Image (cartoon, rainbow, N blue to C red):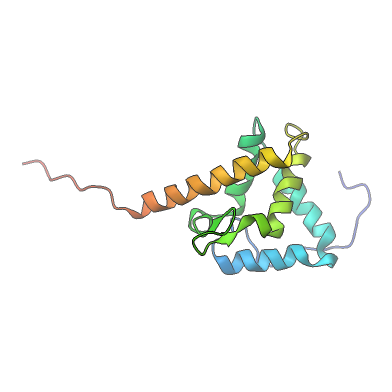
Amino acid sequence: MNSTPGPDVEMPDSIQFPLEQLEAVEAFEQFLKEPSNGPARQRVISSLANIGGQDVKRVTWNILGRLFTDEVSHQINWKGVHNKKPFSRMATKTLLFSAVRKNVVTRSATDAEVTKHAIRWFNLAADQAARRRVPPPSTPPPE
């Protein structure tokens, strides 16, 4: 796979997937924006592209699920409304588009397709995070 060994650039130890806190998201954003991290960014894209799925929706959702915990995804949405982090303006959005297109199955995915599925994923992730915080109804013990 690696025909020519490049410089040994690794992700910082502080960045582990899935990103569990907004601070980790911020650190990852800074990592992505740093030009000298280009080779490492490409390795992240390749790694995420290998997650797989049978169509654009599944590949997009699988990658987002690998990137963010439910708790973090609940604090992000596409436009940043309700004081949430705007995914549409994050460097991670560009990373997602690249990873989806690097996947063999979804190589021809359009920005519009990936955007549509990402918006839906964040909406549903917020719903799931809210549902998990509600304790299940207690059933009375049998008499």
